[in-house]
Length: 149
Image 1: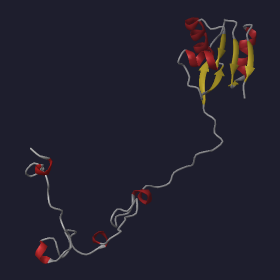
Image 2: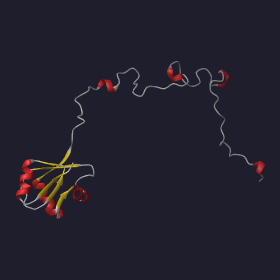
Image 3: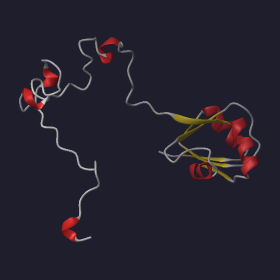
Image 4: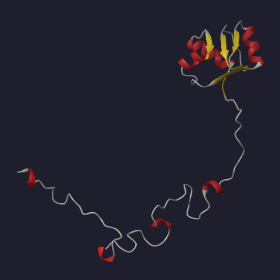
């Protein structure tokens, strides 16, 4: 075999379809694009939400309520839960770092303590918010509270 004798395998090379080159080509007339309309024209682009004349979904579905941009969502812990977590994980300090390390909160969560239940452990709290009842119960048990920003 010589370099000038190399050929592609039989059936590997196909002729290009020449669209719109007259009726005799078999691909003339509408050039396989169907009949008239925007889609048969060059450069056609439909709008993103266009549904062919049907009322689009963003207009069918009503608008309801609103999202308050100033709303803060807290990961809430009651004192009863705190007591269980302190015993289970042997925590000296109830802080974001300790909660994150133990897989209880994510990095961006804000933590709030509520006063439901009892606490007997002397624990230091470093949280974003807490209720007055929770603060009183923590300080009565000998713990300290630091509110983060």
